[in-house]
Image (cartoon, rainbow, N blue to C red; front, side):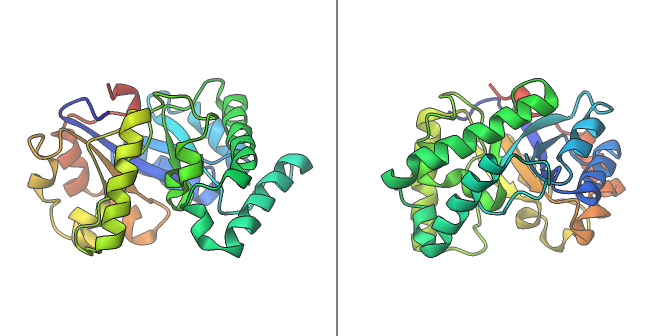
Length: 253
């Protein structure tokens, strides 16, 4: 269930995707532009990211589950690589399979999730603070119902996208939020930084952080995107966060 009134989490996706992406996230964190990130397992920057994390003891680090892009770390064990590759190819055959519960793929999904959790523990020496997904794959029905994710895990909510309403996708988001709330702990709202701060120009709108509207809020950022990188280190953004009750998923109750 959503909890922690007044908590704002600024989470950067793709920590460990490669060295440039990880460095961009680290730069924005050091500037005060984010509070949390999610790490990718079995990618070419995974080891680099784990080493970089040692200098950021207060950075919240979760797992960025990846069921959609092949592992890029050449040291990935063949069996682990093949499991994930089969799952990607299976989903590509019929895109709908990613979003509808499919009993025939549940064992493969469970094993791939378990592989990535274990790799995270191997790299960081602990469990992740929370879970989200590359291209939002954590919202797939087979993932949300997977026993490989313990009940009560802190997990990213479904993305709000009110500037592009669609009755079908809005209904699916509602259903996913209901499922997440039944099994996991999540924020009341989840927004992309560009959803409420269009074009990242001027000062961020203060009403977006009103705890009466969103008692707990996650904001997704991508520092590797050039247009976000500078703005996430700008005085307008950093000073806004300094006035807010910011934290990590570790603070979510």
